[in-house]
Image (cartoon, rainbow, N blue to C red):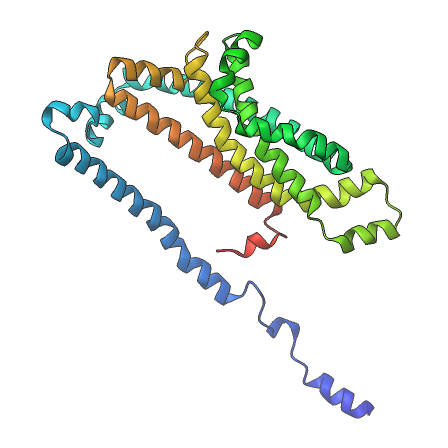
Length: 292
């Protein structure tokens, strides 16, 4: 029997010879998808520009072409002219400050409320309906109240961002905490872990993917809230939303389209930033890291 075991040990395959999860095949597959990941957005961008030109020159008469100016005209009149571009960048910077401050407050408040609701069912039943109300009530309906309570400047814009971005943080964080595997809870119970230790070492780390999902959603909503706040609370320095309203009233179509593009690019950049942060935070161990 011992000789047979020795013979089997002699022909054992070394561990280094076994195919690893991140072997050459996986590396080659990732290399193959990189060109597609780059070409797909470029292709969609080219198609969008083509549709834009078609609408301008095929659907609109020359007398109405000012409503949708062609992309090259927007580029030369607004983006390449510093006198037009500078106020847009300054307004975008103010909007970015409002959106980021509102997102930070909404994130901290949302995680805190979700943790409180996860501690007791009666707290969840008491607080969750009000979180839903924040999501369902049209923000424009309470804008006058926000202006009366907080003024018509920076603070009111931040409040709008918080109200719009709060619910995804609450819902996703609560879902992540409540989705922890029961066997993991049983292990902590056997170790007689305290509620705080269970929250810090098990529930919050396990809920990180859901928290970052809520953060990515709230980041886009916060940008929308900042732009909406700019349009309705115009005291102080103008934000990009304020300029959108001004350009619309003055029929400055090139500047209007340029401001819309800048606001959209900012929203995409914020979403991409938090997507990258999520991958760095949970990508090494969560199952979503295996997706191409």
